[in-house]
Length: 564
Image 1 (cartoon, helix red, strand yellow):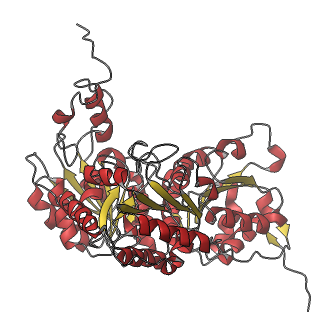
Image 2: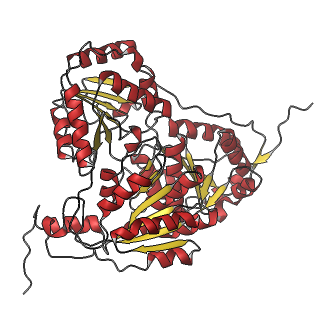
């Protein structure tokens, strides 16, 4: 029997490596620069989702990476394709999501001539992703793919970019196949767990905050058990709300945008703050105001899988270089004190959260979003997946929905508009049996509205709730605070979004009164099609707690000068 391996093209070696690493789906916008990869995918069992825009494809891959815990895969063509995909790479980097973007590249003999659509991706993406490389030799594809999967998943996860010269993909090689990669877990040492126990025994006002990525269901359950044994109040970082059951009596709320003032006070006054997995960056730290830099007043225990993040901004009292999975696995060795002095504070924190997350009636025109969120909270299954991009509309989702399980929220900590619809498509393709709802403002939706066609094409029956107030609401709110009554560049003229859905072959509903929302939503669900529920809200209803008029001049930076 011959030991000679069969020759395969570079494109086929790429797909072979994806298969070996258990890739379940590929997202792409096709291009002539990687046709050999498409040819290999034709014979592969890996399904391919064809997006309308590279930004949408990259966001779908990023959302898949969030759910799967292993790299989401995206293919785009060179030049404009790569630049369009940058939005998804930025989400993956700031959200610590494993992802690999493959870019078709000009032929090797044409490089350094500014050939058609040529870009040096090492220079372009060097500060945006964890690692960028270009594969010049087909025989090195297994090596590069192995490294890409390890880099994307290890330490602090993130995106990797591999450029693929078009002629290299057609080259033949008989190189051995690559094996599957496994993420590297790191664990706390015995000394560190002992130190943590001593800190907890000395504490009077501890607070546990969960964030970041690399969380398995087992780690989430172990962390809940840890919180129960110590009766700790638990917060979750911005848009990581699936990490702790919001109906649990220890839940204290989201440490995010528009934070409950009572929770912000608890973070500031905690004598022991245990931050697991997250970075406490600008948004969850309320503009770096909850913790002093570099030395927090709180005794800070920072647990993170990336050693570079420990001490990068905040100097921790105890730094633990461990993944959330590795840290959670060791928590049974940490024992609570005989008497827990902070139990009353834990109950108070939960009561404050429940009051904060209970929608209060507001006297506004159009549809009242607080009532919409209450209706959804009372009727949706516990495993429903809610997605959103960025905009003031998202405040209602984060504040009023009570997430009760892992992988129930997909939202960008990077604050990227347009994320909700692509993320919902990825979620519905991965979990077709679950209800998947994308929330989007009218501005946010139109960033990636063309991907509704991708949902129809792939049979992903997502439910999109478009919250339409006729403007870029977040920017308008800032505008009214700093430059009241000087509206510029924030108004929007919108189409009939229900007609838009029907034009693609989906289902469309328009809602102009609060009481009409649930019947319209139910009809959208029953249609079995991708659907849009066009919800018209009053522009004055800019947030759960303020109107536009109430915001005017609140942070006046420039005194307006009349032109008359």
